[in-house]
Length: 117
Image (cartoon, rainbow, N blue to C red; front, side):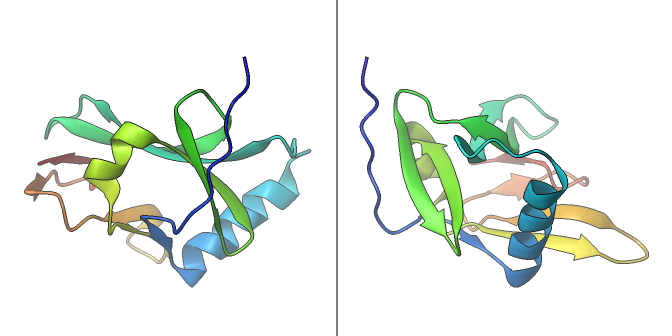
């Protein structure tokens, strides 16, 4: 079964900090070049939906984007929830990790990894 490759303008953006951290993670591991950064959503969390962020291989139904040299995979159905979202990385005294700034979220939880639409 062939997986079609579709590359167009990415519906999400990665800040300079997020790009730096993702590339650092890719460099630290024996990174398999067939993997890319998966962005998506899944049901659950205290607000109804959780963000998905991790390295994965391309799957059926995925769209592929290249953001600042990083292959990004996102299932077509997830674009509705993520369009316009900015992924940032914070490395401060009070917080360290990826932060999702999603204009489509009607509400978010305190931890910032769960949202509702």
